Amino acid sequence: MPDPSDAAVTSVGDATYLRLRADIIAGRLTPRQKLRLDALRQQYGVGISTLREILNRLASESLVIAEGQKGFAVAPATAQDLREIADLRLLLESHALRLSFAHGDLEWEGRVVAAHHKLAATEDRLLAGHERHTVNWVRYDFAFHNALISACGSSVLLDLHAAIFDRFLRYHMLAASFRGRGVVDDHRAMFNMALQRDVDGALAMLSSHVNRGVEHVLSTGKLAN
Image (cartoon, rainbow, N blue to C red; front, top):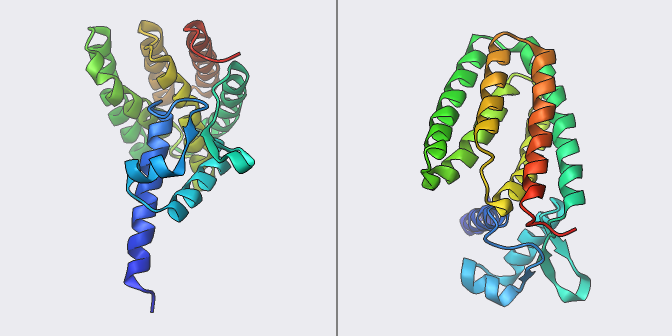
């Protein structure tokens, strides 16, 4: 029989992993920042061995880098890395979009409608200057893109997409700049194309949407070369 304390340790470790991961993606832990175990132990309230496991796990996701005897640091943020992540996101999301448009049913359409409604409402607030809604926009942006591909029929593909989407999102959080009306119009167009099952139009819009997002982030000048 498993020791109940083992489950508690796992639960604490998983919760800390999610907190650390979220802090990296949100930019609260900045690119190239040294992740000193003693400081992290105090900040997150877990032991050194648990932290090492978490940091190695994050290193496998390319959110942290292991520096040999020097320990760990937050992964750098560079223009080249952003472009590579964008290319991978497009590869995964485009494939999933084709599958989802082909197999999506009424339940899928309902998910897309609900996700776009929340995203559009939040974007309206952002356009009106209510910056406090930026955190909600991040959540609803992912939820919308995830809804579009949710009928692809592959949990592996969805998991891979979610992981790369988070890495892409990290750059937008570091840029700390909402693209404005252009991104709102992109989402509205993709929403309409989804309901019309216009896969070619949606794929073209997705490519333009992601690439313009990359150029917007680069235009802020907040990334390393």
